Amino acid sequence: MILHISDNSIEIQADSIPLKDVLEMADINPLSVIVAREGTVIPVETTVYSEDTLKVYRISHGG
Image (cartoon, rainbow, N blue to C red; front, side):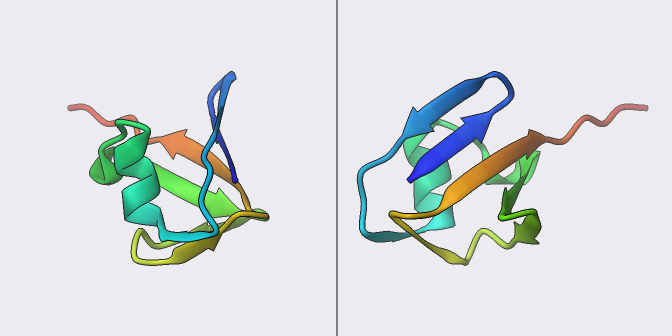
């Protein structure tokens, strides 16, 4: 699967894996991002597959 983060891309070798584990392998805090698969936001509990392309959007917040 390919994980797109801003201008970077990371390829992860796995047939199927929970999204939360993918984010942890990429050293990304699941609470600081939103992930989309084919344009649809998916929860971190979702199982993702080798043919998936995921787009990671960092959440920006402040006061």
